[in-house]
Length: 107
Length: 121
Image 1 (cartoon, rainbow over the protein chains, first blue to last red):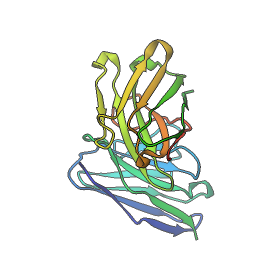
Image 2 (image 1 turned 45 degrees about the horizontal axis):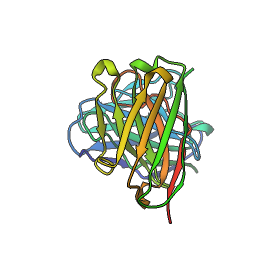
Image 3 (image 1 turned 90 degrees about the vertical axis):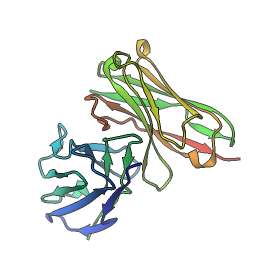
Image 4 (image 1 turned 45 degrees about the vertical axis):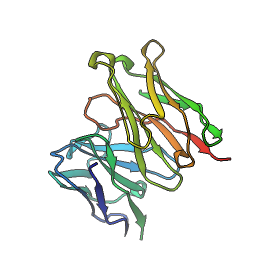
């Protein structure tokens, strides 16, 4: 199985800050990577697919990059609604696997 | 607008069975690959299994922890996805989400609100 490791596990930031979350795959997955946002008590929401493609309706302050084993999700200017938990997911091979999540908290 | 509505969750004894349903609307269900993803209380996300569309052979893949115990099926005429869960274990306790993969790319475009399955005596 491909292990997905996110860092940090949690981060505190302020509105307007730029935040970067990292995801590392235990083996190469090309660009088969997605990012999700989950608010408490809600279903996850797809933000980024194909490592860098923005899902329709997602604000442009979200961006993704990387290929192979190392990936990043960047939020350019944090808004109040962005404080949530973020997950990466590899879509390269079965079983499909997620990172453990990164909790983004208000400082 | 894509809508997914799961139902069928509840409390079940270890070793018991439960069948979840997911009613879909707002897209061409026949063409969609569909997955179940679960989330144990306070934990992260775990993929359970996926069924491709009939045009892709209806191939089904499962995560190792559920293979042999869970069965995914679909009724395209009723726009409904199913998850039959047998031999349930306490570690199967989770919110179960129905998801779409409309682009056949292995990620999860849309999610239902989830249904809670609790396995406990």
